[in-house]
Image (cartoon, rainbow, N blue to C red; front, side, top):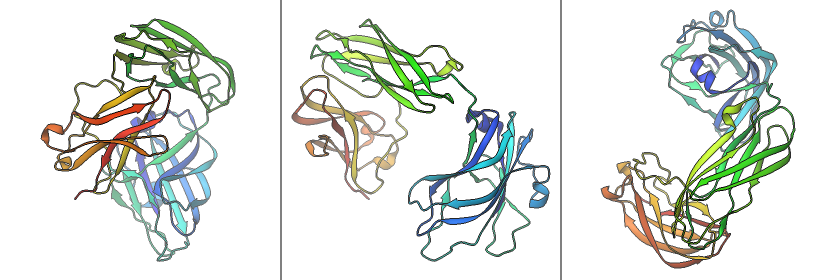
Length: 382
């Protein structure tokens, strides 16, 4: 199998790579079955100012002037689900910006058996004529390539030259917080060391303003290169029945990359409603997840600040009309997956599409600081 593919400057820029590319690989939606498949692989790179793929469809001509960055074996692993392969480059390729051509020449003797399901690599067709490729099931490699819009989803690895960069990746706190218990709430966050070395004594700061004013700092004693730390701040007090809006900021000090030093989150304080996601009031909910014609549960993990009685949940149903006439109901499970309560069943009509829908439960006690799983049950459908 041979291919010559164009990767746009915008696609390369979106990868956030440093100048020195150190590895190359493929994303697979599945690997092979039965046994791994090994073959020889030659990979070529070339920088270009071209806006489209202008390479010759003759492979020998197309790779003229390209740099051989890998020449060795590649093994496609056994995997029933998504996997990947990364090949270490013989020496770092100096990527100075712009678009790139990637070419490869793959030869394998198998095994090829009827029981061996072929691997499938992830691809896209976002650039018309972005690829040239051909394959043959003989010992003679194809010399002439055919044009295709489908390009493999390439993986580029780069040498990390950053010595001091910490990012705030995520704030874990409800978007809507019930204050009827008159208790306190602890904000959590995830920070990552994006440097190429261990960093010590990293101060992570919490600042809450609005309905509540509060500040706290947590120091991460040591964080290895590439690792993530979960930070739990001291809890801030909440008066019973307090309502209003909190702005929650989590930050780390300035470093080599300051664009990732701060995450912000808006939190609504209510009397008796809690929500995980943003308090979205206007959206079309065009994207959804489900089991197609199958059945199953779609659940979110939830904890409550105090012991309470759960009576309902609001869940959005996506807007595609393929949802019409299907039935759904809500469930509450404990941490073992045992269903504690089920709601009324709705048959999806036009009025249910693209909006939150309320599902009611018989009053169900939920304990403080305990894991529950709440979401939708999808029965099988046609």
